[in-house]
Length: 324
Image 1 (cartoon, helix red, strand yellow):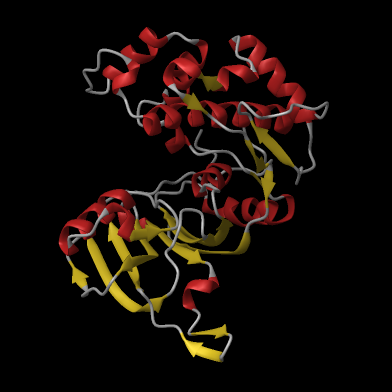
Image 2: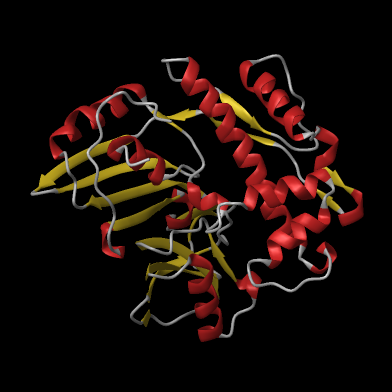
């Protein structure tokens, strides 16, 4: 389902260099001076601030490589966000102590300076993208498609990668919440595991599946909004959890319908038998795309734009290419 009415361009990302992501971190990590009781002092540490550039590797795998390289513990390295594997990405990380630069085919690490703060997940403003769509059949449709996104904003869908390479992470989450542990385990074991019960799987992994179900519900509610309305909604839609209080608004009513269909209720997000509790939150239904521009070269379209943290470039590409 598409939000925009303009015709698509077609085209696809064909190689890692076609998908470039530059993370925009919070400014506090670049402060050279700090105020104290005695006035202003130079920020010296105790953390190294470094720029991580990677290609064809996940952020987590790159972090593990750096940990091994410098013999670091898990809590001695911090990062703000996870970046795509099939891409060329840059992001800042913090490392306890001092480091040397690293350069391999997949990972480059360059020390920038020092900071007195350890970076935590979520401590970023957004991401700047430079994406090349190749083999576009209708490049002439690009101007109208991009102009429409600028004017009408973009639905803030969770991207397909949220639901895993098998596309069923949310279904595992639904089965866990329904109490159908055996079916959930069967799906998990199809991925190459050989677990006898869900208690053998880490709570972090189980929560990951439930978060995918939360995301699935959000997307379904957003689908309904897109099918009914033509104006963007800049309110936040709930991501349901055990502490969510559903009200009488559009999103809450749609969530109730979806959960009733799945025979899920709010209480299911607190699972005593697995010692799991998944909290609720909220997410912007629509976002504005900033700093957006494009260039056409033969049958390729080069897009540049900035998205807030947590938003997916693949959603924007879907609206432009109309590739289903």
